[in-house]
Length: 187
Image 1 (spheres, rainbow, N blue to C red):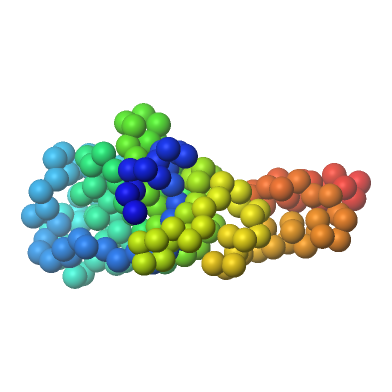
Image 2: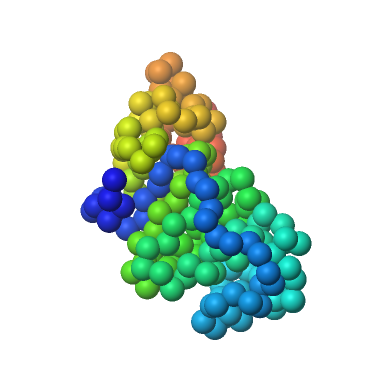
């Protein structure tokens, strides 16, 4: 599988798969070979006090952010397991950062995760990968076949259930839009 060929459908793609980091988490943060490390730390929401810490002392969230800052200058940025290591606030910030890197700096981005919710408002195309082989691909979060390979998010499950029972809800990934739609229906 050539990752470069996958970008024809969008510059940020999601892959439902397992992600294993190859980053070397040894030594101190200040020993990393990163251009403008102070600016990079700010970009990933870390402060300069982290520079004197040992990598093994960092939380999973901090390690993710450190790994990401080492990739900021790459043309293709591959990140994974966001749902396992980031809280909601950090996840939303990292999504905005990835979108900015894509739109303003023309970086190609691959997000690998088992949780499809990570891809909401981020990717245009989703690939299901197993052993470096594409099993399935779609650009529709409401594609039922996608959820044969991964767990279906509750909001999609709810909307599909409503639609199957002839309740016309708008297909949305935003809980607030769903609530507004339900409110409009009952009033």
